[in-house]
Length: 341
Image (cartoon, rainbow, N blue to C red; front, side, top):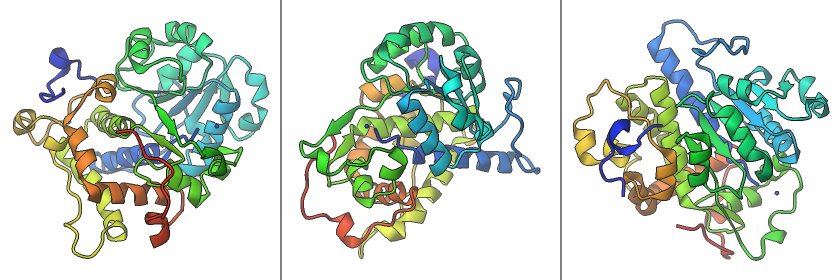
């Protein structure tokens, strides 16, 4: 149990599917806020060359240009929306990605170069390809680069060894038995504009369908903290931005007589002892995301017990796709499944 979150030298603290894009939209928003508060001049998008490592924009790389990689690219472009110059795809067959090249997206076959440039990397390759890819990229991964794996056959503990990296996220899905009547759309971008599917795929949705282990959501929050730490944001500033993000949804989610809007505190993410000794100017430590997804953390209990957070997150999740929940959608009569706790 991660009761005592301490610096990296002591506890390894380092840093068909719904793509869960809103969190990456919020990551970019946090980065922009950090830049505005640290500089007097506006952050501007620069040309995406490998030497622009100090750029504060969100840079996303996709390894794999098959069906999943293409669907993910379309989703990022539509729902973030990420500028085309901030997205790159590495695949063994870049000649099949002309539709993305025409949009200004760089498509090539250079996995190591891709991860040396990106701060978020999606693995959309086949399980048989993953060991060789890990050998290619492990020495080029920055410690704060977030690796998000869709290779379902490889557990996160194995990925940690293959990549010699701890900033890894891997979703684990749970499907309701009668999923077919919910998930009928073939295209991800179309599916994510359907209120029924959105409600069915939200981690706290009572509607069932496709759901994720809540540890995924926990990992995403710690990944966000890691991203902010990489930008050297003081932890009080990170907590303020998180609280503002969810407070904006509070009036939509709360009911009469409910508690005051959410306000995150340091001890929600680290132990009370560590929080007490964390100076106001210091960022959070870089967390080991593989450990976060496999063990209990200070945030585990918060996610399980805060119904206010659960309501706010559901609204924020749907609002990120332009969908506003009605009273009936918030409290459906029939439940077809529940997320794994």
